[in-house]
Length: 254
Image 1: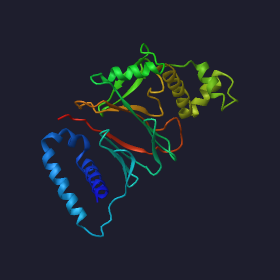
Image 2 (image 1 turned 120 degrees about the vertical axis):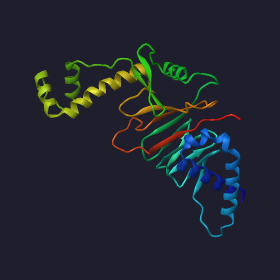
Image 3 (image 1 turned 90 degrees about the vertical axis):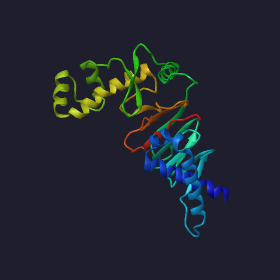
Image 4 (image 1 turned 135 degrees about the vertical axis):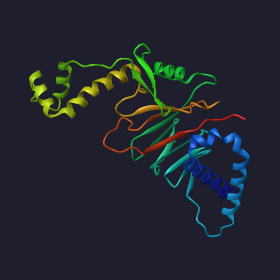
């Protein structure tokens, strides 16, 4: 009965987070704490009194971290949830990965009182990044990325030499220019690859790239030290990521 009650609580919390909006619920947690507690208790009683009703499938990935119906993960300890294709999800070395699809969610922790941007720059430097070349860009959705202060602009000779690997018939810059007039997407990707390489070499593996690496932090939290690094494609191409949506809730202290 204790195990079933725990599963019911997790299901109810997740349902509330999805239907009401995770950030909104946690921002208003203090005012509604007693009401929510009574609501959860009533729901547990209602569920346990319904004989023959099948509960949602809940399995524990690690202590305090639960997967629901292979589509939703929730951890009260980390104050985070995410949705996706979670049938083969595993958690090792502070990283969520799936065996069958690309994508990584890495759980990082800053020090108490440490500014999140200072933490990210320190993390980048520890991985060989150069703060003179790199910066942090914040976005309205609460995510942020490591970028170069100035983009890398390759020369035409560099572009020609790179694209010749798959197009050996291109021998001159005139050949390259004519090729690009008919194959603009391939040439654009070729140019982008130089900027990606420059970014990774100078701003570490945590830098933004065309493969989709970014950070997420509960900026309105008072006490949360959790910072997530989310790489949707994890250096692979062609396959869709198992990651669909990630929510990191403020960790309010009462």
